[in-house]
Length: 298
Length: 291
View 1 (cartoon, helix red, strand yellow):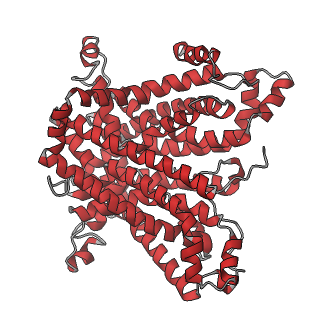
View 2 (tube, rainbow over the protein chains, first blue to last red):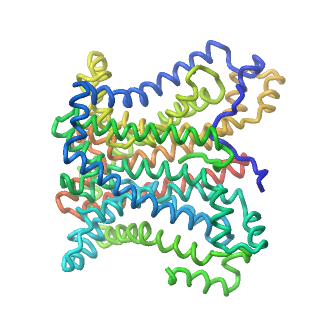
View 3 (cartoon, helix red, strand yellow):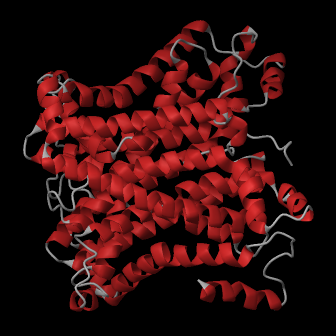
């Protein structure tokens, strides 16, 4: 089972084209033109937006840049964003481990349907993700009157933000683990059980080490989305400064107030988070490619 | 949790079996947690939305959907998402090909950068694009001189949607380009096909299902996209107002029925896209042996 070929997203390490015969590659001018076109497209659509964040943030110098983080509202936004990620990510890790165990280690009816349902939040608009919780917990929602009677606040409060974040980050960990654990099969676990290990010990000492890099990969992506989510959170948050404002929402408020240096300042922190995420992701793909499942799209 | 766990156990007793027997423990626990959590967080809330939309009645729903402003927003969202996904599909193939087949300095960094739209918060992308394409921005100013206005027009929406969808189209095609069977390429060359003809008749056809999958994923993402669009769109009703923004506006007016109707249409469209993706992958697996 460990012999299963793992199709990697990473291109082969050795240059394939360098040694190829002329008939097996495009003429040199075509190659150069295609490369320039691809790189120009990426530069225009990806690199420039990234660069402009940092240039705008530093446009008035370092003083105003750092001053934008010292604002009490900005600090409150950073704290709330961290709090939401600290709750949402572990929840989805536990769910991801349970779902991948149930789906990959057992063969049951409706397994593929379950996988499709787990992926569902990816194809739901973030705004709709926020809306569904407003329809349930909002003042005019299904449980609204009940919640109001008991003084429980979910919408326009932190619980709503956590719920919306959990929804949009729901599939990240599970979808990294399921294909990998399916590839790995159950022989390792069966061997451990035969040797007398308890189920919990099997999970802790056999399964978990087998999937640790894929788990980390899923956590990285899940965390990036949890900290950066905007649409779903903006529907349920009410944008109360200092209370229900996450970093992305704070960016929007500052931008709409024409406070560009501060808006891009906070945005640059989120962009740094994105770059760290990409670096970590690339490192895992490069260093631990065989420990990650072959995947197509995210 | 124990309620949900009881369900499979009850069915397992019946014939045909719900689950194949195995020595591995923990099915009830993990399946129970999975099903409960999935139901509470995803399925029930979505069901509430669809029920709420259904309670308006077909006639009411139709009236809400065909309301001129709603219809304009839906048209804007779907039309521009199709266009953006098409652009992404073409450039996604090109980028996947160049990154996999050619060697040039900085290739690895550029390869990592492709995933930027996945990692960059949408609000950050939104204000960055707005600043780039604003009339006094780095790109907005030269484009303005050419008479092209991007920011605060549908063109601005298109740029944002191309941004968010691009990685889907690159990452679905890239593994297949890496695994192209070299022998069929060699056979085509030996049999005297020109490189162009080999590309068109031998190399590209197996990539088409992956391209379509990337297209569908980019489309589904673009239709629902909110954060990166609203800053650069201008949000003019009937012109550059997208459906997700209209949901937010209706919610702020406490018009739950209106918001729900638009959301239901969008949900149905994304489910259709999801179904199309699954069928495509099934087809591709049967026809070419890979996804």
